[in-house]
Length: 125
Image: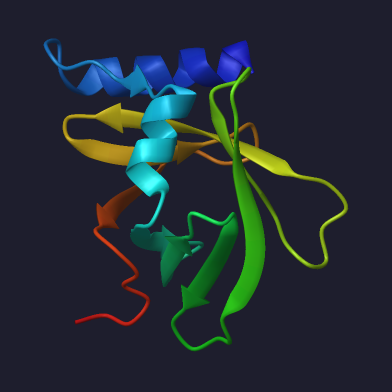
């Protein structure tokens, strides 16, 4: 995990000497996501994901049926976690901020950018 964060830090620092990436705390992740919708691209497909205050998350991807899962924040790890109907265990992601943009970061994938829209915005305007 430390190697992943170090790689992310180097990636972000290499593009600008003055900007720095910041790993969000559990409280910051909760404030950012709760009641809001993340919008981005995952494996080349556009998606929207809503994070309900009740721990329910809905993932909507272009050309696919929406999926309903659960989400939570791990206070000790400062990470977002989700579990989906076919998953055996919760999967965790750090949320990083760099130059005003947000990124999902895990051991398995490179930093993946997303933006946040206020409220439940599962349908693009």
